[in-house]
Image 1 (tube, rainbow, N blue to C red):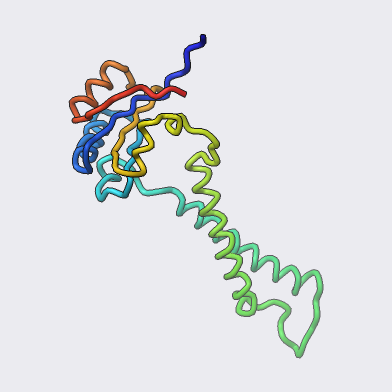
Image 2: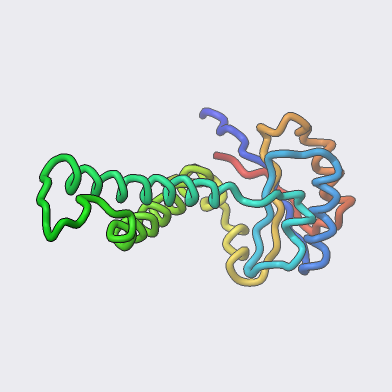
Amino acid sequence: MSAQKQYGLLAEFVNTSSVLHAAEKVRNAGFRKWDVFTPFPIHGMDKAMGLKNSKVGWFSFIGGVTGYATGMLMIWWMNAVDYKILIGGKPNFSPFGAFPPSYEMTILLGAFGAIGGMLFLNRLPRLHHPLLKNKRFGGATHDKFYIVIETTDPKYSEAETRKLLEAAGSRHIEMVEE
């Protein structure tokens, strides 16, 4: 019988304030690969976990700039280079006339950038997660609050991590296997 690889320690907390304070303790202990799971958003959790602003906005910005530039270049190429038609002495290309389609391309590629960036940064699609096999973890969608510290964290030591989570007020701690 082969031993399964350990994923991390799952610690259960009673309420929002206890998991918030525990998250601050885990952050202050220097852990990097850990997460908090709650049935609803908790105000101040980002700060307690030490999370910075999301980078998804940069993906959206780059997509938007690419869309605008692509729209302008496409219309310039079609009207001024590829298929010149002189109509009433008007110029073959005008940025004012090209703005509406370019604006639409900005919105389209900005949205694609946001979705693509979110998927990339969240390492999705992930078809399996070890926590989903854990029976106790199902309470995270109802009324339970959990902190999971992964075994791949450089500061991870099972005994020390377990002590930290017990000191933080966890009422149940168990190892999650992959």
